[in-house]
Amino acid sequence: MDLTLTPAEEEFRAECQSWLDAHVPREWRNLVFRESLTNAEEIAFLTSWQRTLYDGGWVGLAWPRECGGRSATFMEQIIFNQEMARAKAPPLINVLGLIIAGPTIMVHGSEEQKRRYLSKILTAEEIWCQGFSEPNSGSDLASLATSATLDGDEFVVNGQKIWNSYGHIAQQCLLLVRTDPHVEKHKGLSALIVDMQSPGVAVKPLRQITGDAEFNEVFFDNVHVPRANLVGEINDGWNVAITILMFERLNTASLLESQTKIALDELIDTARRTVRNGRPSTEDPLIRQKLAQIYIDVEILRLSTYRSITRFRSGQRPGPEGSIDKLFWSETAQHLFAMAMEILGAQGQLVKGSKWTVDSGYWAYQFLRSRADTIAGGTSEILRNIIGERVLGLPKG
Ligand SMILES: Cc1cc2nc3c(=O)[nH]c(=O)nc-3n(C[C@H](O)[C@H](O)[C@H](O)COP(=O)(O)OP(=O)(O)OC[C@H]3O[C@@H](n4cnc5c(N)ncnc54)[C@H](O)[C@@H]3O)c2cc1C
Image 1 (cartoon, rainbow, N blue to C red):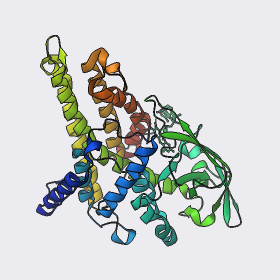
Image 2: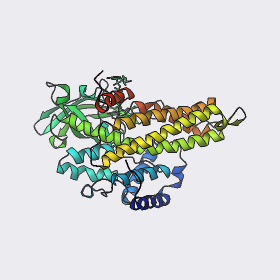
Image 3: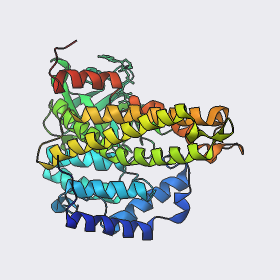
Image 4: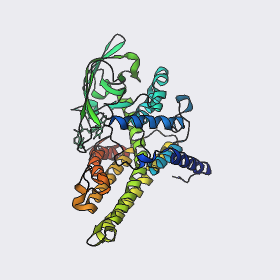
């Protein structure tokens, strides 16, 4: 693993920094709750922000030029992600389009699908969601029951999905369905692109522990989907799903590694400002010890993510090792935000809206939000199984 930046990469970093310094809206940097997708004004702002980034040539950096990207290296994409986090820039609203749908269409999609969908992912003209989980199929995804029956040139889709992030604002959904109920469960699945405005699609937001409703239940009642929207081969959806999950884990880890580092810096700053027993809590030996452990974990996370990036840079497709980064990131983030609550004591329980909150309730919000991190995109137990069986080669439990 050699991630020493070349002079060209250093120059690229400087280019990112100066563009972001000039373009990140100042008022946004002071906003505490950056990921709430329930406010129409914020959604409109985030959509226009992605367009601004696109016009500046920063969206889909590592996508090939013929797909609308800049054919930058994956390392340059990582540098850009790091600089976005450092600049406290607003996030990309079409994140699922960019890290899941786009790469999947590039690998498995038809030429027509590439022409039709890719550029609108980059510009955020079409927001994407991912329709995998169902009330009775989460970790055991292959047992999903939403069906798609071929009728002439169309599939007719019936069933229900759940925990569908961005579903309430999405135009397109990458949907995993059962197209053959008579074969082994992994062998009867297919991936479809479904227009969320199609008749028969109903979206019901679900409220989370934070009070926000970022994800949804989605119901499909005789929804007609053109056969041309099949991604990859019919009944080869499991293969498509695995590509999606690998891209998701690789990209999520590399995106979130920098954010975790920034959260750690903020935590240390908060600890310095918080007085416990008459002195800054950073002078409390137990707190210092725990902060040091989190610092070490964040550093391990950085190195582990870099190892995955190195593998990807050397031409290999993302593999099961991405599970290590996702597991380690989500658990480290939870420890970090729980530590913030410990430092703040009873005051940490005050949520946004109260005038007595510390940092406008940021820590309480992140503490609650981070509970989802060890569930979304594969639970910690499932990731440990994958690491045991597919990375370490241990026998199945
Ligand atoms: C914030 C958030 C956003 C999400 N966004 C999306 C989205 O956009 N699209 C989408 O399709 N899904 C999404 N999900 C759903 C997510 O993928 C599922 O929640 C996840 O796969 C777990 O499935 P489940 O909730 O059904 O839990 P279950 O699979 O029912 O698991 C329940 C518990 O049992 C444990 N368990 C299950 N099987 C095993 C096993 N074999 N060995 C050991 N332990 C096991 C699990 O670890 C867990 O603790 C999101 C979830 C969250 C929290």
